[in-house]
Image (cartoon, rainbow over all chains, first blue to last red; front, side, top):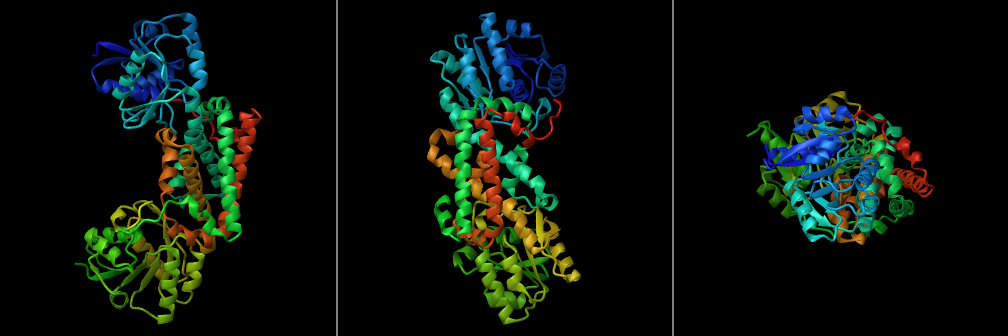
Length: 271
Length: 271
């Protein structure tokens, strides 16, 4: 039994991974709340939380609150917290994939820090949760301008194995457009073409193709809000990548493979 | 000591992985030959071969010959074997990434089977070789129309942990354009943009981005011949992917995220 309580709102794969990691230590008891009772049952069954509680009990008792829902639900929850007024916790954080809508919704909420762990899974639900999901991975947070609050957030992130990386919300969203959202759409478009191409193609996939296929299994229900809210950043990066691929196609058509040389790293010696 | 000898021509990461795997069993002694003496030294030092030999000794003594060079060197070696006439081995196979130039060069060589293991590494040389590199991975081979020869090739592939997949040369090259060569160029173009974008972007990479960055470390010296010889298959696949990305960009620009729904798999229940 820990002497402090973490309340997790949304006990899916990220919330469940946070719960499983916390329950390996003895600092925290882990309370969970989810609008979907099946998600709470799965979190209890897989050891991601100590107890399922009501939303009211969670906010009344938790020392740390983690909002671990999809983007839309996260923004809705944060708006509700703002309307309902101060809560007991001295640290409230979210983990959604786009940060500008979150920081806008959270403006004025004391003890709130917007964060984003760089750990995803193509599988959803607490059964996909892993206590080492964040180990050594970057975990972005948007500095709150309250240095003591930021320090609490960093310590909490580190206690989960994550590596805190400070980044402003708008800059975060521009970066993840390139590092996460474009790769997702590449995976989706690629998998679509591979399905068109058929059976044997699937068998003869290299490691990159397998990773693109893996990510293409993500649910649209999670990605809809991400793609919509970060569209202004994703669209230009998609076009840049498409143009680069078309340039490469032109080079291949023209028999000018040497034009692709600059895309590859400098040559290294065999050894 | 095995009572049969495998001769590996080209003791880099694939040849070295084959050698290391064979040396775990006791069926074969592994002889190695490489035009680069440093590659032979590395193969001996890392336990990939039992002995370094001359090319002549290798062909005079080996029961199985594996040509494990880059595509250009493989085609050159095969042309030389054809000119020099029959060899002792009852199985000669190559492992190059494009099969039509190989089967054309090998026409009429007895006991030759063109193959391609779906296992690559961004690292080169015997130090990157792993005995389990092929474990459970597809290993394509082009049926020779000599069923006993094909059976020997399948057994050899299986002895290395690979899963034999029969495919005609032209069809193989169309498939790997999509499953291997397009992903390589996507990785290269993507890494190029990420380097442009700078430091923090690198820290905030998700798993797909990391895989694209990994593959982007491959040497151009290996890829030049692959891209040139398979350009007619790669070019149209690159254009298809680029067009799909541009369509997605248009949907994002138009606020029509729903248009991307069809790219994602059907929704699943939380559990």
